Image (cartoon, rainbow over all chains, first blue to last red; front, side, top):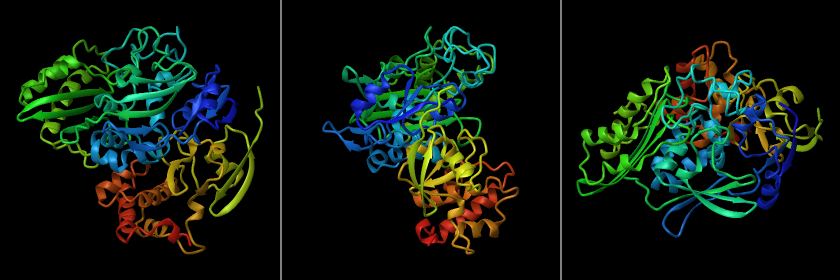
Length: 337
Length: 167
């Protein structure tokens, strides 16, 4: 690890002021950035430890929603009684990711801000536009089994690795940030970005901005949801494809539908017009397949990840079927019913 | 290359207080092994992918390889060396011996500390839950069947909490 200065922030204002300096990085749980520093992918001059700022409460909001503190651990979030009861989709997604040890250390804000696990991003001996803009993308034409099929560019085909964020996207969460210019809210769909020609930017945070909380709307979809994650081994592996599916019904007909994909793009992948196909229809394999086709429109395989296109379509149908039947995917027994 | 100032750090490790001065880039794993000579905690991958370095911080299991030690000022750390009571093995240690839950033994300290964390969390009752919630600990000898059996023995015997076991 390249030596760095370490400062423990005593207040949010101090953290923002220190974090706005070039070459400063925030440190919370550390499960990703410490690893990236070991690999010299991240070379901060200063680490601003935000671990003692509090910001770890999980509490109900007046509109019936829930506020998740940015520094609450992923495990404490997944197992919080209000999250388990009201947002089981979020609990399921968090428990599908990483390992118990990592979930104990990793925070909610850190989960949003973790970097891709693209091998080339980690390997400083290879070109990577995300790590060193302008050097090229080694994954295009390289080993790309885990890479993006949607929304990628010729500059970068990396995926966002989070499971939690896929559920947050489906739930229409809102990210609360504080920065040098005050506080603002960012709709989850606008938080992460597609690579375009600036793949070094994972999200829309401005310099010095700090995630303070994630707000969940009152609509929890606790009756009809599923988080289905498909990967090369049953646990402790990143998604090849994952689906956060949530439905609500008016009688026999679907009133609301949310479908977000993980493992396929630079951000959780949602398309309103794909979800709209389901509105007002009775839950059927035909409608689910139509939704999946629309969601995967424009998908491009890069060779080793071609399989993801079919896999994602089938996973969408399966996850929606599970959600409609109120038989969500278990994160313990991984049998896919 | 700049040499950052060393920072003060107070830690309790296996019941012993330590007042240290440390460079900020030192991980808890390296502190335990290289400075405190507690080599029971193993460095496997050093990237949070294998679980061999699992220890308990204030009773919670984490990967010590991914934790900068200076962030833990005031914390209580428990490593594999802190589990037995003199010559009396911790119930998990005894169960691992009884069930032959290892071959080379390199992952075992991490497995046992992780299992204690699992018991503290109270989320694993069934064999499937134990296996899923131990998935952060890899065993390249493939002793998983016996590891799950050993942990199951302790969980089903009432999952004696660490605090009691370490008295």
